[in-house]
Image (spheres, rainbow, N blue to C red):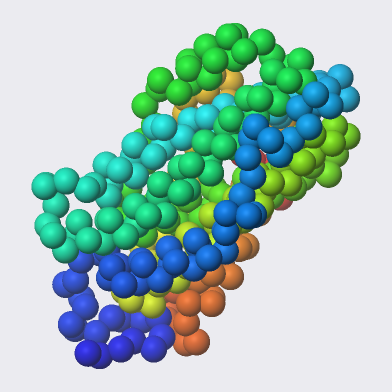
Length: 296
């Protein structure tokens, strides 16, 4: 089999191939992710936090607003993962070859969903334990957003991994920034653990993106470019007053989702020793999309 040793036009044997990665590649990426997250390093919402010590009275109004905002974002995951299950299905409507690939990805997706659900539960628990919200009121608030349909306008698998790569890195960076300014130690602990998880999720998506570039070369460029050209964080089109709220939390802790683009460029650069013109144009485009103002 011909092997492409640099990003460029893929060999003829691969030009008509499925846009999915080979199952063995996905399995390797999943195994690396699992090895980086042994059971001993995962946190437990019920036992790993000093909930009785949490106090929203230590937070500024802006910090309280930020906690409410990120709880909504983390809690939207049922719709997010339903989208992944639709795009990478495990049923009799897919070929055996695609089922095998999707099944390998599912090993990651189910762990990812469990970790993200722990994020939502930890933030919910913090709001209630700290006095920031009443449980029934908060459940209804989360249900209002959670019931709304979440979609992404992509067809190519690499677009999903690119979108999630940016989202995970951007969220990690915000959690780091928020942790640096809050004084409630319980919340600082939560943000540290959540940020650590988001960093690992980013690493998996980066691994998948590199594998796509090495396997399909320039054929992966346009789907990646499309993500950046129309990128919006989850729920940007559904949360009432999203942009006004986003600007407020950006004033609480330095945040700009385009800061994640620098990390995306590094992933692309790392994917090959030699560069094609299309890949060079892609990195220039991504760099040009970075801003100097706060964005969410």
